[in-house]
Length: 243
Image (cartoon, rainbow, N blue to C red; front, side):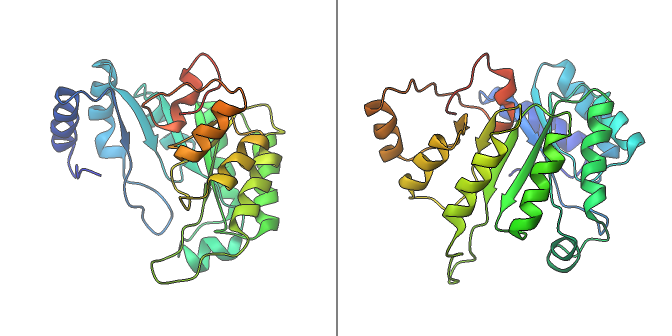
Protein backbone atom coordinates (compact mmCIF):
# COMPACT_ATOMS: atom_id res chain seq x y z
CA UNK A 1 0.00 0.00 0.00
CA UNK A 2 1.05 3.59 -0.55
CA UNK A 3 1.27 5.89 2.45
CA UNK A 4 -1.02 8.92 2.57
CA UNK A 5 -0.88 10.39 6.07
CA UNK A 6 -2.40 13.78 5.22
CA UNK A 7 -5.30 14.84 2.97
CA UNK A 8 -2.90 16.57 0.57
CA UNK A 9 -0.78 13.43 0.39
CA UNK A 10 -3.88 11.34 -0.32
CA UNK A 11 -4.75 13.60 -3.26
CA UNK A 12 -1.16 13.46 -4.49
CA UNK A 13 -1.03 9.66 -4.34
CA UNK A 14 -4.46 9.27 -5.95
CA UNK A 15 -3.58 11.63 -8.80
CA UNK A 16 -0.33 9.75 -9.41
CA UNK A 17 -1.92 6.32 -9.59
CA UNK A 18 -4.62 7.70 -11.88
CA UNK A 19 -1.92 9.10 -14.18
CA UNK A 20 -0.40 5.62 -14.18
CA UNK A 21 -3.70 4.12 -15.35
CA UNK A 22 -5.55 3.26 -12.13
CA UNK A 23 -9.33 3.66 -12.11
CA UNK A 24 -9.83 3.42 -8.37
CA UNK A 25 -8.31 3.11 -4.93
CA UNK A 26 -8.75 1.31 -1.63
CA UNK A 27 -8.54 3.74 1.27
CA UNK A 28 -7.63 2.02 4.51
CA UNK A 29 -5.37 2.41 7.51
CA UNK A 30 -4.51 1.38 11.03
CA UNK A 31 -7.13 1.65 13.74
CA UNK A 32 -7.19 2.89 17.32
CA UNK A 33 -8.02 0.76 20.37
CA UNK A 34 -11.72 1.15 19.59
CA UNK A 35 -11.33 -0.25 16.06
CA UNK A 36 -11.82 3.14 14.40
CA UNK A 37 -9.79 4.17 11.35
CA UNK A 38 -9.08 7.96 11.62
CA UNK A 39 -10.71 9.01 8.35
CA UNK A 40 -12.44 12.22 9.48
CA UNK A 41 -9.56 14.55 8.43
CA UNK A 42 -9.70 12.97 4.96
CA UNK A 43 -13.42 13.44 4.25
CA UNK A 44 -12.96 16.48 2.02
CA UNK A 45 -10.18 14.82 0.01
CA UNK A 46 -12.25 11.63 -0.39
CA UNK A 47 -15.17 13.73 -1.64
CA UNK A 48 -12.92 15.48 -4.13
CA UNK A 49 -11.62 12.18 -5.50
CA UNK A 50 -15.18 10.96 -5.89
CA UNK A 51 -16.05 14.08 -7.87
CA UNK A 52 -13.01 13.39 -10.02
CA UNK A 53 -14.59 10.00 -10.88
CA UNK A 54 -12.07 7.80 -9.08
CA UNK A 55 -13.77 4.63 -7.86
CA UNK A 56 -13.30 4.43 -4.09
CA UNK A 57 -13.47 1.46 -1.72
CA UNK A 58 -13.36 2.60 1.91
CA UNK A 59 -12.13 0.17 4.58
CA UNK A 60 -13.85 2.06 7.34
CA UNK A 61 -13.21 0.32 10.64
CA UNK A 62 -15.90 0.60 13.32
CA UNK A 63 -18.31 3.53 13.04
CA UNK A 64 -21.19 5.19 14.86
CA UNK A 65 -24.15 6.72 13.03
CA UNK A 66 -22.59 10.19 12.65
CA UNK A 67 -19.24 8.91 11.38
CA UNK A 68 -20.98 6.58 8.95
CA UNK A 69 -23.17 9.37 7.59
CA UNK A 70 -20.16 11.67 7.08
CA UNK A 71 -18.28 9.00 5.16
CA UNK A 72 -21.25 8.10 2.98
CA UNK A 73 -21.75 11.78 2.13
CA UNK A 74 -18.32 11.78 0.43
CA UNK A 75 -19.89 9.70 -2.35
CA UNK A 76 -17.46 6.77 -2.01
CA UNK A 77 -18.62 3.77 -4.00
CA UNK A 78 -18.13 0.82 -1.64
CA UNK A 79 -17.56 0.33 2.08
CA UNK A 80 -15.64 -2.77 3.15
CA UNK A 81 -16.31 -3.76 6.77
CA UNK A 82 -14.65 -6.56 8.73
CA UNK A 83 -17.19 -8.69 10.58
CA UNK A 84 -16.33 -10.54 13.79
CA UNK A 85 -18.67 -12.02 16.37
CA UNK A 86 -16.21 -13.55 18.83
CA UNK A 87 -15.69 -11.45 21.95
CA UNK A 88 -12.45 -13.23 22.86
CA UNK A 89 -10.96 -12.77 19.40
CA UNK A 90 -11.86 -9.08 19.35
CA UNK A 91 -10.38 -8.34 22.77
CA UNK A 92 -7.58 -10.89 23.17
CA UNK A 93 -6.29 -11.31 19.60
CA UNK A 94 -7.08 -7.92 18.07
CA UNK A 95 -6.70 -6.04 21.38
CA UNK A 96 -9.71 -3.85 20.69
CA UNK A 97 -12.01 -2.21 23.20
CA UNK A 98 -15.07 -3.32 21.25
CA UNK A 99 -17.61 -6.12 21.07
CA UNK A 100 -19.56 -8.14 18.48
CA UNK A 101 -22.42 -5.63 18.57
CA UNK A 102 -20.11 -2.86 17.33
CA UNK A 103 -19.48 -4.70 14.07
CA UNK A 104 -23.16 -5.25 13.32
CA UNK A 105 -23.88 -1.65 14.32
CA UNK A 106 -21.26 -0.40 11.83
CA UNK A 107 -22.88 -2.33 8.98
CA UNK A 108 -26.34 -1.07 9.94
CA UNK A 109 -25.16 2.53 10.31
CA UNK A 110 -23.55 2.54 6.87
CA UNK A 111 -26.54 0.86 5.22
CA UNK A 112 -28.97 3.27 6.90
CA UNK A 113 -26.93 6.17 5.50
CA UNK A 114 -27.29 4.75 1.99
CA UNK A 115 -23.93 3.01 1.59
CA UNK A 116 -23.16 -0.09 -0.45
CA UNK A 117 -21.69 -2.33 2.24
CA UNK A 118 -19.49 -5.38 1.67
CA UNK A 119 -18.73 -7.29 4.89
CA UNK A 120 -15.50 -9.32 5.02
CA UNK A 121 -15.28 -12.46 7.18
CA UNK A 122 -11.87 -14.04 7.80
CA UNK A 123 -12.46 -17.76 8.31
CA UNK A 124 -10.18 -19.23 10.96
CA UNK A 125 -9.69 -16.00 12.89
CA UNK A 126 -12.59 -16.79 15.21
CA UNK A 127 -14.46 -19.90 16.30
CA UNK A 128 -16.73 -21.81 13.94
CA UNK A 129 -19.64 -20.87 16.21
CA UNK A 130 -18.79 -17.19 15.73
CA UNK A 131 -18.51 -17.70 11.97
CA UNK A 132 -22.03 -19.14 12.08
CA UNK A 133 -23.14 -16.07 14.03
CA UNK A 134 -21.62 -13.91 11.28
CA UNK A 135 -23.91 -15.69 8.82
CA UNK A 136 -26.92 -14.84 10.97
CA UNK A 137 -25.85 -11.18 11.08
CA UNK A 138 -25.36 -11.14 7.31
CA UNK A 139 -28.80 -12.64 6.73
CA UNK A 140 -30.49 -9.73 8.47
CA UNK A 141 -28.20 -6.97 7.13
CA UNK A 142 -28.68 -4.70 4.13
CA UNK A 143 -25.52 -5.54 2.16
CA UNK A 144 -24.55 -5.92 -1.50
CA UNK A 145 -22.13 -8.85 -1.29
CA UNK A 146 -19.97 -10.89 1.09
CA UNK A 147 -16.22 -11.46 0.90
CA UNK A 148 -14.89 -14.68 2.41
CA UNK A 149 -11.24 -14.68 3.45
CA UNK A 150 -9.11 -17.34 5.16
CA UNK A 151 -6.54 -16.94 7.91
CA UNK A 152 -2.99 -17.23 6.61
CA UNK A 153 -0.33 -18.69 8.93
CA UNK A 154 2.66 -16.68 10.06
CA UNK A 155 5.78 -17.83 8.16
CA UNK A 156 7.28 -20.76 10.02
CA UNK A 157 4.05 -21.72 11.76
CA UNK A 158 1.86 -24.67 10.81
CA UNK A 159 -1.36 -23.77 8.98
CA UNK A 160 -4.74 -24.58 10.44
CA UNK A 161 -5.44 -28.20 9.55
CA UNK A 162 -9.09 -27.60 8.67
CA UNK A 163 -8.89 -24.14 7.09
CA UNK A 164 -9.79 -25.39 3.61
CA UNK A 165 -12.87 -27.22 4.85
CA UNK A 166 -13.91 -24.27 7.01
CA UNK A 167 -13.65 -21.85 4.10
CA UNK A 168 -15.73 -24.07 1.84
CA UNK A 169 -18.28 -24.54 4.62
CA UNK A 170 -18.54 -20.80 5.18
CA UNK A 171 -18.94 -20.09 1.45
CA UNK A 172 -21.69 -22.70 1.23
CA UNK A 173 -23.60 -21.22 4.18
CA UNK A 174 -23.05 -17.61 3.10
CA UNK A 175 -24.28 -18.47 -0.40
CA UNK A 176 -27.70 -19.15 1.13
CA UNK A 177 -28.10 -15.42 1.70
CA UNK A 178 -29.54 -13.20 -1.02
CA UNK A 179 -26.25 -11.62 -2.11
CA UNK A 180 -23.22 -12.92 -4.03
CA UNK A 181 -20.28 -14.39 -2.11
CA UNK A 182 -16.74 -13.68 -3.29
CA UNK A 183 -13.56 -15.49 -2.27
CA UNK A 184 -11.12 -12.70 -1.57
CA UNK A 185 -7.39 -12.22 -1.98
CA UNK A 186 -6.36 -13.09 1.59
CA UNK A 187 -6.24 -16.89 1.64
CA UNK A 188 -3.62 -19.65 1.42
CA UNK A 189 -2.61 -20.04 -2.22
CA UNK A 190 -1.77 -23.02 -4.40
CA UNK A 191 -4.89 -24.92 -3.34
CA UNK A 192 -6.85 -25.32 -6.53
CA UNK A 193 -9.01 -28.14 -5.17
CA UNK A 194 -10.21 -25.86 -2.39
CA UNK A 195 -10.92 -23.10 -4.92
CA UNK A 196 -13.02 -25.48 -7.03
CA UNK A 197 -14.92 -26.63 -3.93
CA UNK A 198 -15.69 -22.98 -3.11
CA UNK A 199 -17.08 -22.49 -6.61
CA UNK A 200 -19.20 -25.63 -6.31
CA UNK A 201 -20.35 -24.37 -2.90
CA UNK A 202 -21.74 -21.24 -4.52
CA UNK A 203 -18.98 -18.64 -4.80
CA UNK A 204 -19.93 -16.04 -7.40
CA UNK A 205 -16.40 -14.77 -7.89
CA UNK A 206 -12.81 -15.31 -6.84
CA UNK A 207 -9.70 -13.17 -6.72
CA UNK A 208 -6.79 -14.58 -8.76
CA UNK A 209 -7.87 -18.21 -9.12
CA UNK A 210 -5.02 -20.62 -9.78
CA UNK A 211 -4.25 -21.78 -13.32
CA UNK A 212 -5.51 -25.27 -12.46
CA UNK A 213 -8.79 -23.78 -11.26
CA UNK A 214 -9.16 -21.83 -14.49
CA UNK A 215 -8.47 -24.99 -16.50
CA UNK A 216 -11.08 -26.89 -14.48
CA UNK A 217 -13.63 -24.14 -15.10
CA UNK A 218 -12.96 -24.18 -18.83
CA UNK A 219 -13.22 -27.96 -18.98
CA UNK A 220 -16.52 -27.91 -17.09
CA UNK A 221 -18.30 -25.33 -19.22
CA UNK A 222 -17.99 -22.22 -17.05
CA UNK A 223 -17.79 -18.80 -18.65
CA UNK A 224 -14.88 -16.88 -17.11
CA UNK A 225 -15.05 -13.10 -17.05
CA UNK A 226 -11.95 -11.35 -15.78
CA UNK A 227 -12.19 -7.90 -14.24
CA UNK A 228 -9.19 -6.04 -12.87
CA UNK A 229 -10.96 -4.61 -9.84
CA UNK A 230 -11.19 -5.32 -6.13
CA UNK A 231 -13.68 -8.09 -5.36
CA UNK A 232 -15.62 -5.63 -3.19
CA UNK A 233 -16.64 -3.87 -6.41
CA UNK A 234 -18.41 -6.97 -7.69
CA UNK A 235 -21.82 -5.35 -7.27
CA UNK A 236 -20.87 -2.77 -9.90
CA UNK A 237 -20.67 -5.54 -12.51
CA UNK A 238 -23.76 -6.52 -14.45
CA UNK A 239 -23.48 -10.22 -13.67
CA UNK A 240 -21.76 -12.65 -11.35
CA UNK A 241 -18.28 -13.49 -12.56
CA UNK A 242 -14.85 -14.62 -11.51
CA UNK A 243 -12.65 -11.59 -10.82
